[in-house]
Amino acid sequence: MSSLINSEYPSIDHLRERTRQRIPRFAFEYVDGGCNTEDNLRKNTREIREVELKPYYLREYGGVSMQTELFGKTYDAPFGISPIGLQGLIWPKATEILAKAAFDYNIPFILSTVGTASIETVAEITEGNAWFQLYHPKEEELRGKILQRCADAGLDTLVILSDVPSFGIRPKEIKNGLLTTLI
Image (cartoon, rainbow, N blue to C red; front, side):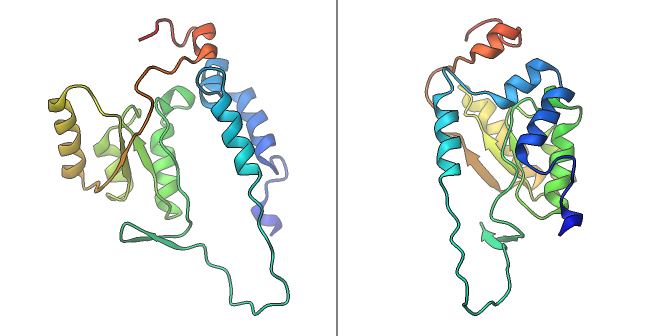
């Protein structure tokens, strides 16, 4: 077990602090923050921490497998790498690095419409096993072209973004200059 734990970063909090030190402040705040007053970010964090795993001792043990089937494909874990827009702001080639890691560990990778690698590049890295998150553009022709590129690249799992119908204000991005105008 000790070989699975990096003693320099034994927890998410340690990784978060190291990330804060290594990437530019505007990039860290983008990844670490949320919209408006960050109420949903706090709520989601609180709720995930309320999940309690209950051990059942003194029962027959048949081994552990986290494998799960989603959309006709078996993955080695019931989670994956979620879409993050503008990943290249955070780290050069971040999209490609994460796509490769997801492929190597057989977990889903979801490419954002505003990712920093092309659909075709991610499809090549993942041998067509990536998912695509569609931010629905206003122009139907553009949407059609994006979906056709996904189909041509072999990405057959589409994640539809269900978001609020207005622009989310991100005060940290406004203050640090990443976002200079409101849409």
